[in-house]
Length: 416
Image (cartoon, rainbow, N blue to C red; front, side, top):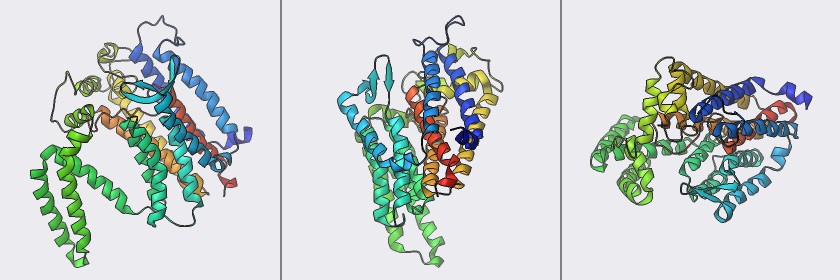
C-alpha cells in the first residue's frame, strides 16, 4: 500500500479533491439558511454530502489497497452483479419523480446506475483485451455493443433517459480500439437530422438536404464514389427526418418533448417547461465577472432554480463566483480530462488503456452535457456534474471509476 501511494498520479487526485471541495461549498450555498447551523447535520443536504465525502475516503482507501489484477480477473462477475442490481430495481426499487432508479435505505437512497458505469468499463476492457480479433469485424462490434446496450436498455426502462445517454460515451474507447468511423458519423448525422427537422420541419429540411447531398456527390465524383452508399445514406436521412414528428409525439414522454421544444426555441414558457432553464440563465448572467459573492446570490438564496444542488449546480457557480468561477471549474475539468487522456495513452496493457478511455469518456460526456444543459445548449436530461453535484451514488460512482484506473496506472509496469 505505501509503495502504491507513491506511484499514484497525485495531480489527478489533487484536481478531483479541489472539485469535490468546491462542489460542497456550492452545495452548502444552495441549501444555506443560517451560519449557526451544524455542517454535519444529516437532515441537511450539505450534511449528507459531507458524510458521502468522508465515506468516499474510506472507499478510496479500500480500492487502493486491492490487488490491481483483481479488476480484470473479476470484470465479468462485477458486470453480472451490476446487471442484477438494475433488474432488482423493478422488484425492490423506489420510485421518485416517475423513475424507479433507487434502492431506499431509510433516509438514504442508492442509485445503481452510477456504479454500473464502472462495471461496463471493466467488462468492455476485458472483452477487447482478450478477444483474438479486431473491432473491424461486425461480430466483434456486436459483442461490444451488447456489453453497453444491455444496461442501457435496463436503465431506459426505469425510465431514466439521462443516465442512459451517458452509456453512449463508451463508443469512444471502442473507436480508439478500431471501431470504424461509420458509427460515429452515423450518430452525429442522426442527431443533426433530428434537431434540424425539429427546428425547420420535414418540408424544408428534405429539399435542402437533397440539394446539399447532390452537391457533395458531384464534388467527389472524380474519386468515383459508390453510388449505392450515397443512395442508402440519403434514403436513411429522409426516412429518419420524416419519422421525427412521430418520435416526438408518440415515442417521447410529454416532459421530454417539452425539453426539445425549449431547446429549439419552440416554446418560451418561463413559468412552465422553460422555467428551470430560464432561472438558470438568469442566475449565471447576473454573476457578471466576479460574481455576487458566496451566500449572496439572489437566485440561489431565493431558491428560484429547481434542483440547483444537483443538475443545476453550475448556475450557483455562475451567480456567486461569476465568469472567473465558471472559468476555473471548466479549466479544472479540462485539466482532469486531459490528464486522464495522458494516463490512458501511457498504459502498457490494452485492458488498462481501454478502461482509462472509458473513464475519461464518461467524465467528459457528463461534464459537457451538464454544462450545455445548464446554459441551454442541450435538453434538460438530469445529468449531474462529476464530483461537484450533490449525491452519494454519483460521488462514490465517480470515485470508484477513477480510482480503479489510478490503481491500474500505478501498477502499469506489472500488468503487461
